[in-house]
Image 1: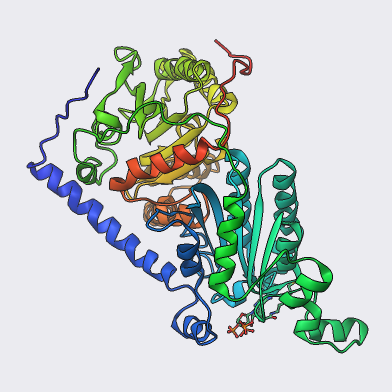
Image 2: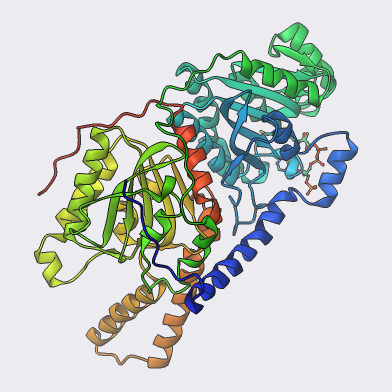
Length: 532
Ligand code: COA
């Protein structure tokens, strides 16, 4: 056994300053999360309650096993956009009758639960998670369909929501729809495409077009119940499989449906008992310095995340800017790649490639802990083949078939973000710490590059550089890039699955690894052509 030994002095000023900076960022995040919990705001939540209805989150709470955790995903979707943060849908992984399921709940307090462009993106991300990890999907439906003013962004790509559902069904991944209220137009195809459908008497209304639309289209007079009431669907159309008396009854029936799925996970379970790390996860608040230019040792993070702080480091003497090694998290074996000094050199890229191949040989999931400014630039490194070595690492990450999970702890810049399995490389899950920053490069560097290029262009034209204008331009660009590099903004863009409290890292990873094990975990020997 190789137990990591922490070298951090938790009584140092530096540690306290780091904790203080991290706590400030967490407080900022908390404000946003509170807004998310408020859904469509007091007025609409009150109206919803006055109608005798439960909120989306209360429905989820009732549905999942008592006292079991819910791993909410993408709660900050739409942050920084014109739409309500959260994107009018709550999604996450919860345990229902002992089965991990992906739960998707429309929030009817936000514009009638309609789907805007961010709702769509969030839902499509949810479907990808269900497919990749073979997680049964439970939709808690109450949605007026497309957000009509933004229909141009929703209508055409939105077709995929329904295609995904039916393809999940074809792959043998169960889909369950509990319809709580209006489920109009696009909303109607959610139960339409689901394997199991529960509707609630006098509450569920499922139709392609409501009475006014029908009147417009055909002149026919009709009412809600005749067109799409739960009783009609249970007794006449056959769209409803179960008729529930009220919301609680619908949830009860939904839980019975899941109990009868006879669902078996296809991946390997934990190989050992879960053992707590030897160092407190609370100390994770004090490891990342607020100035990301100051390096930190990722072994200090690993020691507070993995079982028993037990870590077998691979090639510790070689390519020391990247720390690689084997550990367990909640009993699940994992390989870890963690940036140690920020920059990735050729040796690090070669080491990562070998390590990824090894993990694929042993069917071991990989965790990427990001704190990188990218691959090294400069004459010496270009001549040493940094492009081909970086490409080799990116090739390995792209073609590796064991599950990957990425955690952005600090910097995640440039092609380093790709090599460490950034969003475009389809990690099964990607979470960010509040301290993370991600962009093509640091804000200062980016502004500096633009300044150098524009100076050269001015001089080539025979002009003279206006120093004041240049400084103003640099400051403006720097501020813009800085604002676009922070986790809240990136989470709003759905470039991660959530910003997490560093102290929750081990729990979140455990939940993610358990969900991942719903699908088979199989490595590959088939990579692209490695340019040695
Ligand atoms: N697109 C955009 N906004 C919509 C919307 C839609 N499809 N449906 C409702 N809204 C808005 C309403 O304008 C209202 O906004 P406001 O409060 O800022 O004025 C808000 O959402 C709440 O709607 P309201 O009708 O008051 O809520 P409700 O709970 O009583 O009813 C619906 C909700 C969804 C049943 C009802 O609004 C409805 O039938 N909408 C039209 C559905 C439809 O035809 N969709 C076709 C999609 S292809």
